[in-house]
Image 1 (cartoon, rainbow, N blue to C red):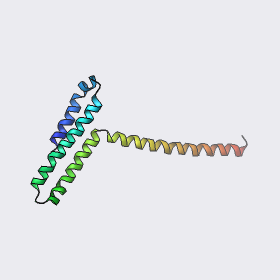
Image 2: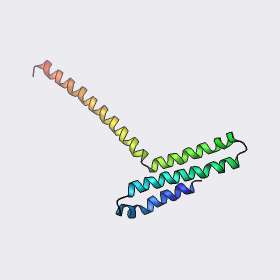
Image 3: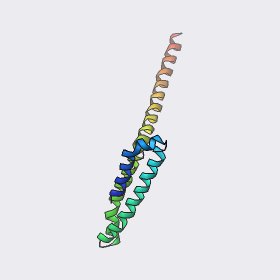
Image 4: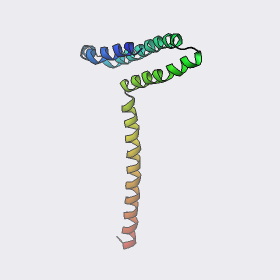
Amino acid sequence: MFLPLEVGTAFVAFGDDSLAFFGVARPVGRGLIVLCLAWSLAVLVPIARRAASSPRRAFAAATPLGLAMIGFAWLWLGGCRALARARARSLARRAARALRRVGGGARRAARARGR
C-alpha cells in the first residue's frame, strides 16, 4: 500500500538534481507526490475491502493507513514549513506587541519625569 508513495518520494529525493537542472524540481516533485498518494490510496481501498468481513471494518482498517499516507505526503509537500512559518509569524506579532507595550510604558514614564 505504501509502495507507490515510497516510489514517488524516492524519485523526488534521488532525482531532484536532474529536475533542478531543468528548473522544474518543485512542480514535478509535488505532482509526483500527489500522483503517488492517489495511487497508494487507490491500492489501499480494494485491499482493505477484500481483507475485511464488512464495509465498516474495511473503513476502520483503511482510515488510519489513509491518514498516515496523507500525513506523510503532507510532510513531504512542506506542511511542517508552513506550520513553522505560521508559528513564527504568531511569535513575531506577540513580540511586536510586547515591545510596543514596553516602549509605550517607557514613553509615559519619560513624560512623567518631564523629559
